[in-house]
Image: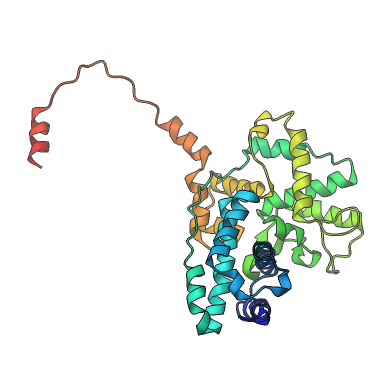
Length: 333
């Protein structure tokens, strides 16, 4: 197997297959790119070669298995990350098998690597009082505080993914009635989400603060350098305000809070307000209804209402009496 073949397959996989044929979004392309890059660097170290001298023969089943073990045990990645990397590798070798039948056996071995069973943790979300404490921790007397309050209010209103928030541009907003925003989600799927009047006011005020012409196509949430926030930047701000909010709301300290927690919070609060599952699915841009159904399964507020309605049964003072007719009937089954 020549070195050139590997380079050819990688180029065709990204340029022709993922982009032109499958039409995957930019973020998915980047995820696949990172996986292939990590795999090539690992294989080069394993085989004692430079990356440019690798061939497909260097990416056999043993190397792939050691790579998966490496990212889980040496890099400390979660099983979910390991499975995501494997999904990319599966896709790459499925593509190779379709291109060249000679490579079918090697590709089949790698495509046959199973995903690891992953423990599904409970969805972490904020109770209403916790969400209020978090927003109240933001100092709106400062320009940065007003920006951050608008940012997290928008996230809570829409339940948007952190990357969707980072990518938000002025042309996607309708800040007169009916207030709404067009969000470009996973797989380049667009959805329209309603905005509260308060959220529209906050964003309108932020745009005035920055001197943004609503007709211009510019990012809404930017840092001090005028560059749009990254996911890491939003996560940094979130952690900063959580540390402040803990003083007034100690329960926040016991939670692992990240940007997706705000999305979970939106879903849970919509559910607790009586919004039906299908509407929440459309609101959040879920592809599979099973994803949305998870919120119904762990809705603590609804469980509390059930608990209050159905109190523990009082212990009966009457002694137990055998019912011979029931016993006879059971034995006849």
